[in-house]
Image (cartoon, rainbow, N blue to C red; front, side, top):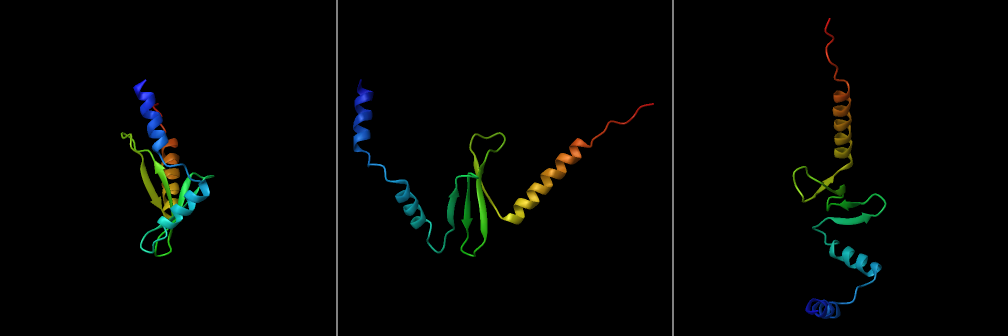
Length: 104
């Protein structure tokens, strides 16, 4: 019973949730300082598109690291994405082409 009362008191004391448009505007203002990256979240691809102060565009996404529970945010350029994709495709092709020697 105490926990319910405490939960109700905490919920009543919490500030009212703002509209999603207001949240997006507040986030845009917070990330619009000239010495930081500006980021926009794309819901369709579930990733952030960030722009550095130099004008370079980065694609940021959360990835799980093997052996860890904590995901890591990985930001890469379009060129780095192409290299990662090519390397993983080549590794897959090499592993599928492994043959066993014929014993006669």
